[in-house]
Figure 1: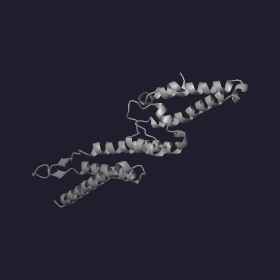
Figure 2: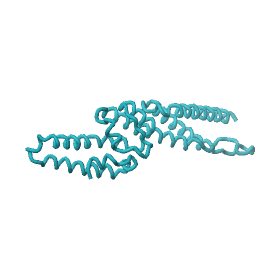
Figure 3: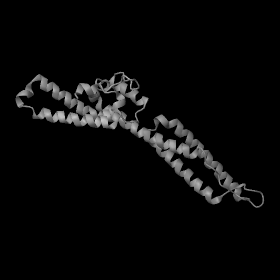
Figure 4: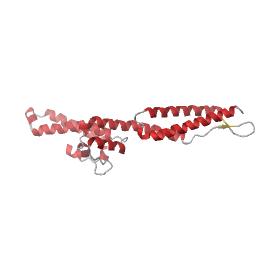
Length: 213
């Protein structure tokens, strides 16, 4: 297999971890082969071009690996298009490795790494926010018997645990909001802050009223 063959690899195949690992191993072998070639040949244009192709490919692969991360969303590809000035239709069946290589990733390597790293950090927030949403969308209240009037009181112990969990969730949201990677989820996080604050206020008032019975 040659660099030309690798350039033809579809993006779907690139996203398979073993694909890049195999490419990296093969290209390192090419690089070692170049170093072992006779010194007389190293001044030839063909050798210089071959070595540059191999070196550039090896240098680009780590960037490709980062871009192949499932955390990359359309918004990240849009940013990548802006910094490269190239159209990157990653969702297209015709999107290949060559498309990325021709976009000149090495020239904007720092920007590429920043975009890829941001996608990972944002994905982490997305997961945490999703877990919080699933946890707090439905939370049962534990009730207790009040004299002979039925189960109309909040259970003290269970409610105290609920209030503690509520405080932890609010602190977690506060940490998310303090992150520079919150932007795509700021609106959702803000809504949850308001909801949990309302729940907290209602429970506190309920407990105050109960204490006067």
